[in-house]
Structure formats: C-alpha cells, structure tokens
Length: 607
Image (cartoon, rainbow, N blue to C red):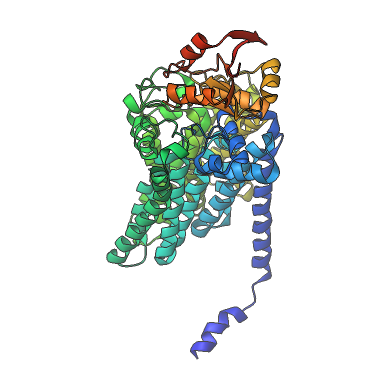
C-alpha cells in the first residue's frame, strides 16, 4: 500500500493547462535572461577599458599567474590593487582564455549580471511563484546602478552575484532545515569577502536571523547549522588571507592600500572600519584621506549622510526608484503575516530581503568614510525581490480593503517618486515623467475603485518600471570611464578623486613598446601607470599604488631595480593623488636628465 501511494502521484498526468502555463513561464524566464544579456552586452566595448586601474590588473593577470593570484597591478608583481582579487580571478582567467581586450575586461561583469538576475528569479520563485520572480528579475536587471555595474569592471558585479547566491542557498536551507545548503551560503559570503571584504558581510544580519526564526527544526539544530555556516564563512574567506600572510613578503607583491603589507589590516582598516567611520582608515595607505567623504555634498562621494542619503542627488537616481514601494511592502507584509506559523516561507523571505535592505541601507546612509553612489548596487536585488514578493502577495489578497490600500500605496509611492527622480534631469526626455504620472494615476484609480481586470496587471508593472527602465537604457547608451561612474543621462557629472584617468602620448607609448627591460617604465600613482601599461602592453610600476602613498616600492628597492637595469623610463605626472611619499620622484629628478616627449616629462633610467 505504501509503495502504491508513493508511486501514485507520478502516475497522475499533468493537466494541459498547467503544462501550457509552465511552458509560458519557461519562455518568459528565457526572455528575461535574453533581454538582460542584450542590455548588459550591447555595444559594451564603447566603454573602452572602463576603469583603467582594474583593467591594468586584468592585463597583468592575463600575463602572470602570480599576478592573477594576488591581484597585481603589473605582471612584474610590484604592488596589488587595493581590494582582494576574487573578481580579478574571473576577468584574468577570461582574458587568459580569450585574449586581453576591452571585451574580455568588461564581459565577465555582464555575464555575472545575467547570472545574478537568473539566480534572483530562482530564489524568489521558490517562495512566491514565477510571476513574482519574473517581476523581481526584471526590476533588478533594470535598476540603473545594476545596468551600470554589470557593464563596468569594478568588484561590485561579482560581489552582488555572490550575495544573491548566498540568499538562494539560505532559502533552499529554510525549506527543510538543510545544514549543507546553509554552509554553501557561508561559502558564498566568504568569497564575497574575497571580492570586496567587509561589504560582503552586510547580508549576514539578514540571512542568519531568517534561518534562526523560520527553519523547520529544533532550536539546537538551527544554532548548530548556523555555527557550521559561520565556519564555512571563515574557511572560505580565511584561506586566502592565510596564504598571503604566510607567503614570504619578498616574493609576492605589496598589498596595496594597507599600511603594513597585510591583507588582514587592509580588511579591517581601509576596506573595513575606515569605510564606515572614516578617519585614518579612510584612504589608501591608511592615512590622509579620511574624514567625512560624503558630507561635502559631492555627488561622487554619496552626498550628506543621514536617512535621506539613499534618496538624495547622489544615490537616489542609482537605486531608489522602487525603494519606497519595497519599504511599504515590507511593512505591510510583516503586519499581515504577524500571526502566521513560525516556519511561514513568505515571512521568512521577507526577513531575508527586508533585513538585507534595512541593514545595508543603514550602513550606506550613515557611513562616513569613502562612499561612492555605485555601492548601492548591493541593494538592488533585495529591493527588487521585496517589491516582487509583496506586490504579488498583495495582489492575491486585493479583495480585502486593507490589503488593496497597501498595494495602492506601493503603486502611488513608486509613481510619484519616479516623477521626482526624472524631474531632477528635466532636459532628458521630459515627457517620460508625465507618462509615469498618468499611468500611475490610472493604476491607483483602478485599484481604489476595485476594477481588478487582467489589463491592470500590465498597468501596474508599467507604473513600477517605466522610470527605472528609461534610466537604465540611458545608462547602457553612454560609455563610462574613470573611478566614479554614474548611471543615467548624467553619466560622468560626479567629480571628486579618481574621476580622471591618466593619459599617454603616442610618442611615450612607442618608447615603452620598444623597451626590453623587465618594466618598461615607472610612474607615481596607479592612474598614470595603468594608462601607460594598457596603451603599450608592457609592464609599468605604479609607485605607491592607487594614489601614490603606499610604501611600495621603497626608495632603496627602486634604486636596486634601476641599478640592475630592470626599469626603462620614469614618466612624471602619472596622476598620483598625493605625488608620492617615497622620495622616488625627487631622486630620479636629481639623478637623471629630464626630457620632454609628446608633452610629457620622462627620464631614461638606462642611460
């Protein structure tokens, strides 16, 4: 009897209507992925190298396995980038496999974006069905800052993919209290740490409480599983830190951005507490660039700190299009589910995504160290998931007046806020904001008066996505470069440190191409050095790392390299933010004869 019952469900044929529905959903999902790929890959190489700093590191990784491992700025392995290298492992291997080019520098991030959208769809579908998942995936893909980051070579693309992967694994673990799935979530967070250090941990205060609250097992097993996941985080993040700390310092590159050649210090200082609190950890090299980087109203540095920061001139157009709706939906969802069983999966999903938004949003709102608007891409999947889940659930319960009013509030807030955001760029497609407002008014009126027809679903989706879609398409249409790219039609209006990249004259580039020394040249600061290396295809030492302030190479080390005939030229005006602290530029100027080539001052170090 037991065997018969076990086999019975398999013998029942799937009704044709359900088969057709599954086919439609499958086609819609494939269309979502195809549309996302088109948005992120279309005319991608118009951006050129994107961020020269990281493009040079990808170039180095394509030429040297050690540079790939450590994330070095040049294949000679003088100094690393000021981030852990996981995202460079992806682009470096891609460039090794397909050759170094603008496309191989930028395409990995686009593919990571498509994967992140697909994984978000899969995550939301498990708790709320395919329609909520489709909306969440589309809203995520069309978030302007997501379109920006998945078409640009910064660490945030891989970071977001790994955080979505952690959420997916957590949702899988919640279904049947599976400790192995929770451990995989820990592994994803560990590698997120190896992508952008402490920022990868911001989702932990959402994932861990969700499992502790809702996993269908005893408290003891829940705590044990969380302990195992925590161990997975430590192991998957700690192996590389241990590798760097144990590797002889004289046979690996200097850890850029650290004060003492330590990856651990970089994680805790410049890329950890320094980002949140400013002060001595606020800039590369641990000193000199701290303070409240966002409090000066500079668009490129996040604007004023406070609760309104995510809605302000800097971060608002990047991420906040659906943020009001997400917050309203989160509050309404938790209220309506307040008496649901502890293991209710919809509420658990709200804890996952809502905790993600609240914790990460609070950190971004109040952090006073170096903050850039594109950091907000870390909020995009959670905001999209919240709106998809709560919008779908509220639509199902629309027959009840309080539920319908909550849905109406979400729609109205989205439309009005979209109008305000579009009004901030009044010269760009001025008609769009009025269309958004009209469509929103139609949707609100239909909800209030109970006109619940199928066409209303399309109107609701249009009201939610018209504004953000327009900004996303404008983002994809504009090439981006530098260190602080901005989304939408405003493109490069940010300003601030790192908005420019170094430039190289044709004559200097030809000189470097003709060299046969281990390093073609050296220049203070990574911006100029990266530009020279990318243009010439030859290794260039970035003295002092990102802004010229790191103690690598030291003056004595550089003198030894020159004495051994390993460096061809010294190029002045490399774009180092502080001009260098090592005294190398002064020593070169006092020791070698300067000459001007193509408008740049260079020194021949081999003569």
